[in-house]
Image (cartoon, rainbow, N blue to C red; front, side, top):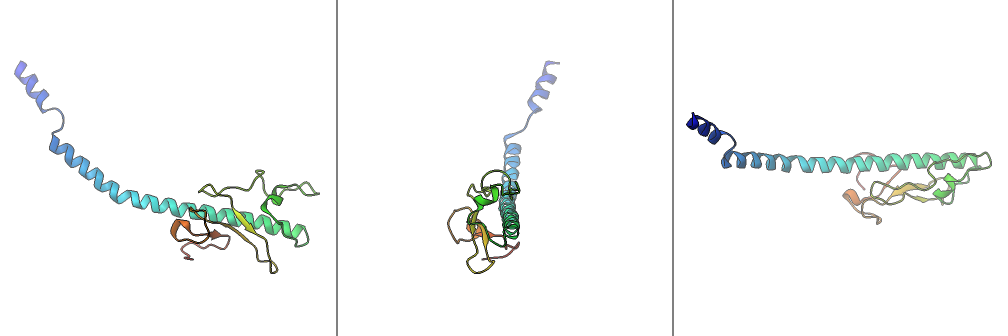
Length: 144
């Protein structure tokens, strides 16, 4: 009876070779999955930035229409209540993009062309990949 228990106990568990096979399979799966997840995360950040820029640009347009096509000098003006008690954006301050930088605004200098944009992950003008600038006219798949 004692020998049967010892034999069962010796067979329970995994061998080193079985453990190594499992670790190799997990490693291979991770090398295939992680790059795809990171790419999707970057695409999600681009979409968030573009959507926020379009929303802020809509508030700028609404402000201009209500003020005789006088555009705001800064985005901060969109948070201030006007004579009608209306604020064009809520939250009290210019929102930040997914990388932690505030959205930027260039008032129109030649008619009604203004720009609401993010400088991307590096916070510097220009760049490629996740460092590229994105504004309210961004389209999915568009390259600068």
